[in-house]
Amino acid sequence: MVSFNPFLAHPFKAVLFPLSASLFLWGCAAKEIYEFAPGCPKITVLSSAADYYTFANQQTDIAHLMTKASIIGVGGECLDDPHNAKNKKKREKGLPYQNKINTDMNIVMQIQRGPAASENHIRVPYFIATLHDGNIEDKQEMSAEVTFPNNVNQIIFRSDKLRFNIPSTPQRTADNYELVIGFQLSPEQLEYNRSHYRSAKFRKN
Image (tube, rainbow, N blue to C red; front, side):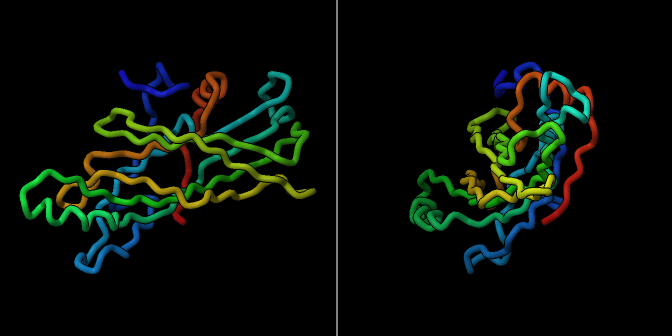
């Protein structure tokens, strides 16, 4: 079974967004020969990894809370990869070729500084994994870094644009690909999330 650490023994508890009701605001700026933008991959926010908590002194009450972060939104668009034009001659000759869909997105998080926090600068690790037919082909690890001004305990963080080059079918749809998003958690953080499970809430951007 293909899996990625630290979720080796845990199935996905996923929040799925079908393309018709996705959190993505899919763009329509495809090549002029197409009336519509290409189909996009499924986007999944892993519910058990949608929140990130750190506590002081191995306690888990609110007085010892150092950091709380939540994924609250995902925004982006899908466009035809401009390099697809190079495949036209291969297609006409019946030669094998692979077109791509550029999936551009950014992640929106709410990051809070708890009463036990001793620093104003907070770094929160997260990942985006690329799955094909349910198998992990790639996993990129990133971090959200924020610095809290004095007397401010909550910040909305929006990542820079992230691009994923996804193989497409001849019909310009993602070829059974999926992007899975979540915080990079320790086994203890994952267990805390599972034992304090709540439905993840997201909003459109």
